[in-house]
Figure 1: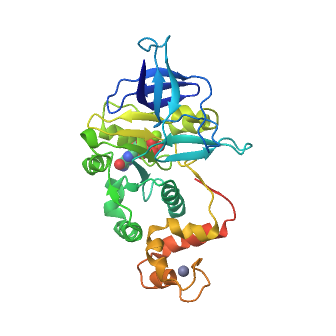
Figure 2 (figure 1 turned 60 degrees about the vertical axis):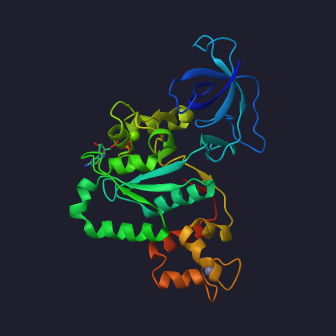
Figure 3 (figure 1 turned 90 degrees about the vertical axis):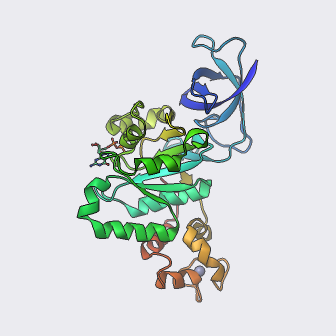
Length: 317
Ligand SMILES: Nc1nc2c(ncn2[C@@H]2O[C@H](COP(=O)(O)OP(=O)(O)O)[C@@H](O)[C@H]2O)c(=O)[nH]1
Ligand SMILES: [Mg+2]
Ligand SMILES: [Zn+2]
């Protein structure tokens, strides 16, 4: 017998599959060697992959299904396998949306980090939404910083959802962004440790029990990365992949004149540059620099861009 299902957990050589949107995970193993053409990844199958499986009898722990084929991915995120090897590791595939969870304080926001993640999403073709959590703390105390944040990221074109996992504010808007019922998407949750990812997932669905305790997760990260990317079903629809933190989110290799293509607000303006390619630094009649001067591109985002240009290596987020 043969069927198609989505990988919802990857624990090394063992997998759990479910026929999404139905949530009824069953075990599976890889049969023989599965190769993805053009992929240098160490793992051929990742969470979010749609796979074809064979099962001689109803799958069980002692008789798992066999994964025989991986469907073409609409997108995926990779990370470098280890510090020593040059191989990469697919951490999640077929994402409908990435939610990047940040706070202004506790922990303090690092805009350059956020910009790197946003750039990584653009490169991998994944729509990004910013989740600004812990508004219960800073809305009253830091209104100017909050307004600044909106100015920077709204001019860049990114949707922002303000939430408080503590009071429940914004959780319904976030649910809408994830999608409900059959419109529920497969969503990656990422962001620095301590911003409230696990708390938000619990607020979205109190029945879920995402792994808490980022200290132990950070400790495990080098060894068991794959098993930490696990999908959770929301009772209202949609699936969330919780990720252990910023590290290991993506690996991007861009030429200097390509970086600007992944800043949506720069992409919008660069048609007007006199030179093609233009690095938007020293060139005369640069439409991007003009847009910075006129306030259509924020100086903060432009500075992040300049920082990336300076760096003569791959971006590791
Ligand atoms: N005040 C406040 N605290 C929050 C909020 N969300 C999470 N926290 C707290 O922030 C800390 C880290 O939360 P956690 O969900 O473990 O963050 P994660 O590392 O991103 O998964 C915990 O002490 C939470 O109680 C929020 O919206 N408001
Ligand atoms: Mg967590
Ligand atoms: Zn330019």
